[in-house]
Image 1: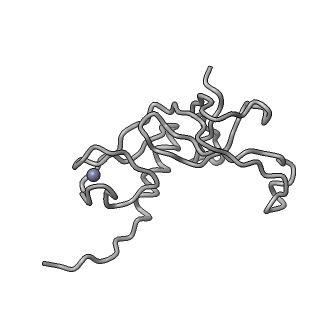
Image 2: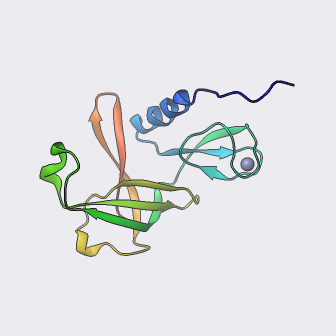
Length: 134
Ligand SMILES: [Zn+2]
């Protein structure tokens, strides 16, 4: 039996971002126990299965937590402050950090229903953000 050795995971990240480029928010789902996961990785943290599949998320979830940035950490973000970074819990149980769109900061609240909205940032790349559900 071979010892476990590191496997490059860049390919998994590429698979994730390629789906985002098609404006599809997808996560890995374990074929062993069915649990969804994010960020992309080779092994299930619950059952240690290496078998998984990409499945498209509904893109709907709720605000689990957030923080508001008032001091930009990089000059390129200076024009955007203050802005919120949100931790969204998707319907599938996956949590992901993202940016908030089309929502005043004063309207942010725990469990606010949100849905994914993609913004094209390059010809071959779109990034997922979240906005209040309509
Ligand atoms: Zn599993």
